[in-house]
Image (cartoon, rainbow, N blue to C red):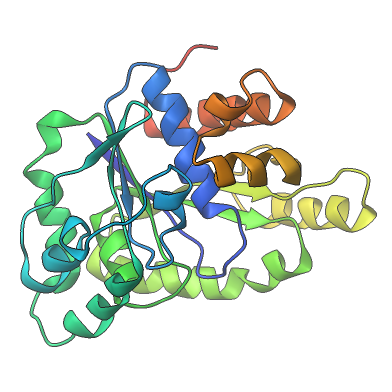
Length: 253
């Protein structure tokens, strides 16, 4: 089992879409996939059609008390530990609990024989839940919007990963993924060149095709279910191959 946390402390980077759709494609390739939603906004959960979630079904008790991983929900061929808004209470509940930041890593050890890959959707913050996700990871996958704000976020990203390495000295960024790219915009082309100069390994950019991403999320379906064979689905399949390569997983060419 390999665990990757999809992380960016800034919102709007495409983190949740990447988690959902790469996870689905890996499951379609035959891998046993577990997705964990650590974001109290619960977009990963709702974008998979998982709604009306009880707090007991989230990682709340795990994060604050060291309880086992809750029973996942099975959806679209994957197992999902969902989230809901009250998970935000774990931010204060973890404070003062010795070792709480390592509770998720310890809980995943107990289920490692059941999964090939775990993808964790980290909240867009530098709080306790984000640390919980980073400490559980074998590596980070970092989506970065091809915008000035993506470049502006880099110092914060580097600071965060340095902080996380105090808990996990072996933690690395397995892949940076440029998102929201529009080749027609000179701004996007210039930012992408900057990213290529400063970041490695860097995936090929994911084009901005807003309509299908938004509509599939409203439908509670991965892109591969909502619009199979579409240009967006082809983008997803390509980035899945790149993610699979850095994680050491096999997917069809």
